[in-house]
Image (cartoon, rainbow, N blue to C red; front, side, top):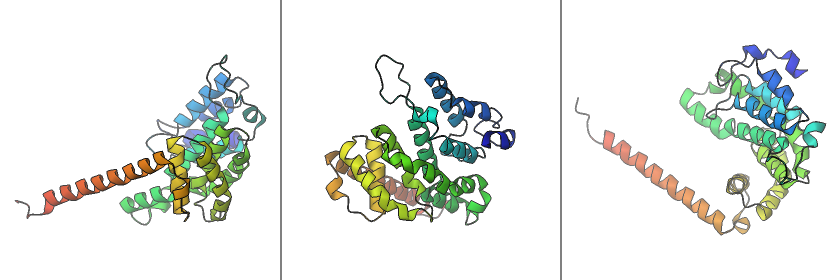
Length: 248
């Protein structure tokens, strides 16, 4: 069993090592939704900070993926009953963390890190390599949830699956995701979700103009404008600093 066979105390986390992780991860399977919620927050917070992949991230991700289909997680309350505390479904929380972590280890982040650290970056950063190597296993656990009856779940599954399919073994699955992406764009108003899905479809070579609404267009144009302003600022800053011979 992963919890018993991992030397958690030897793995780095946000603050210290992961000796407390087995207890918190096990508590995610508690029948009490309040306990599940607190345990998920505690466990995932231990390996989540400033887009960094830690030594404990990969085993936490593997455990998280393994319990997505656990009966306790699958039987969570998705009704958001007004008479009960507003605990978010644990399944959604876990999917969101897997997706966010996959984006933190995606090809763009790798390219940026490699640009700073040199071409040997991935071989030196064992933590990121370990997570990236797990992408097929994580995708296998996420994929069945693309068809979940609850919109919050299947949208979170889609957002997690998108960056996972950057793995060479998974690129063929992007065709499967397109239909789910179109469904999200037809039903969701979440700005973050829509931006990520539209960006992915463009990257896969799809014309998204017919899928965009007025808010999508405004958001896209705003990002382009902000990027141009930022690039202009950097160019001007560089020119101010180096256009003339330094006075020394």
